Length: 115
Length: 114
Image (cartoon, chains in turn purple, red):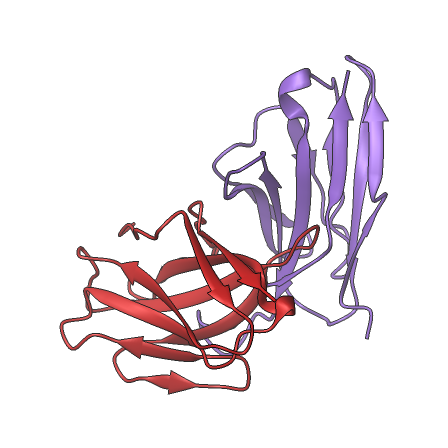
């Protein structure tokens, strides 16, 4: 029962570098989400996807890109890392059927520092 | 989206009940009340949800006021493992919308004393 798996768990980047945060789920969920959580704050939605090939912006998409080529994977790309992107990033998924009250399942996060 | 208000922090003793309040005075008739919690260094996890009636599951109970302007998450016997940030979130099921996103506030930090 792997659920939602995020890699890496920790990463330090230099300003201007790029990287991809990986997220994969083995529950055959249609919906997937990327959130970021700054210290002492709640989570903010970056991007989401309702199925393979379909993505859309959340509240704070600037500086990020996503793709969804398969049901299982939803990588998040940072092209030019900035100190403001230092945060903990969470990926989540939920089943596409059963109504809006189906819960989201979260990974354990990627802790990213940009120096 | 209708907003929720929660205390910043609460303390409890181990093996005692905990009542975590949430105010949502602008709740609409189609808003469900969801609770998630976030253990230290982990992602959030679903706890419970309800609309009008009180709800119970293996993790907790949810008591909803008759006018639905407030609700209370009840942990019947707190353990050290229940120390977490608890988020009260409203989910609007009206009007469709395919994102089904969650809007997180700051939540309530629950400390459980041994």
